Image 1: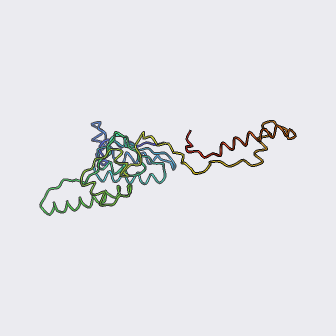
Image 2: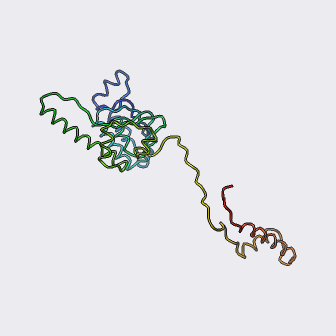
Image 3: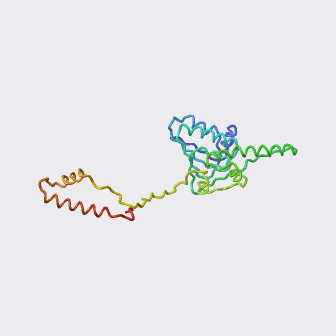
Length: 239
């Protein structure tokens, strides 16, 4: 079994030294790749996410790495704190569950730009394109339309575990109890009459002799009375 922790901000590989120096939580694609390189086909891979997000192309790269890994291992994603922004994109890579106390947030891509009006207008189009690219991770996971996802991103949507499950962004809520399967009611009896061979086996198990016709008759009467009781329709099959 292998484990990947996606904690803290999502950063490019060359920023990792800075965050490690200050002992701040961070995750870069190289952290993920190191674990994946040691995987063997069929391994279990658990990914734990508690991240506010970060650089969007890092979230995209981690998403792609996990999607590729899911083809050869048993991938399961656990959202234990928060999966926000770019981290929510990475969380779409496979089967996932979310702690009932955790949060997910999706929003539009943002950036900083300076320059004249042409630069601003160009960046606006770049951001719209980035939004459409990122929303594919959500649409493939949930089956939602692009318009639905983009609307969710436009409003910076925060989701509880149950809300995320209802929208298909996660597959399960951690520690959630599954309802016991109910036994359906039927119109007729839930049994078949025993065969003659089965009846004969019962007689033999009861220690009766074939020649003892009187004992056999008594046993047959008892068995028939039990079958008559069993054949009465039952309204509730739950003990």
